Image (cartoon, rainbow, N blue to C red):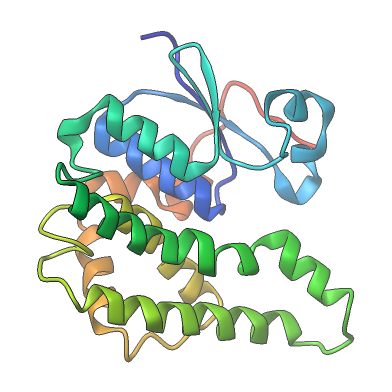
Length: 220
């Protein structure tokens, strides 16, 4: 396999998901940080790679892959033994439903550019924090009910799947914004189990932020 390169922002939920997947599959890769706060994702060199100007972007097998869920599904098909997606079609649907509840319902309205636009529409000092708490808390409440329909140590079954790769970064965001997780007992328990796994530990934003400087950085 040729060099695998991940264009990443340390605090991005979408990037966090892909980091976990790469770690779980044991795929060695080089990281190129893309500094979103400095607008690096809007620079011509990055837009040439990813026209959406989003992270992550993964270069693997001579291909440029974008959109975190599409990337993870590619990796899951590349290594089906990983269990990121179950073998059964009905099981895969259920895992995808849990993952999409985070990636398509919670994440988009709590993304950085959405929250930044919100602050231009109001002079209320705590508008951004209230927005995050409301939508993350409401979304996780619904997800808690969905997960509660299934048994197992993780979101669906007894091994991490795509659903957990989406859940854990969202729990990180919830804690960052001060969301009360008291009522989300299954989610908190799953988060604790994942925190014991090396693939999740190494992908954590605090670990990534503390990592030594990479060979190349895209910045503003």
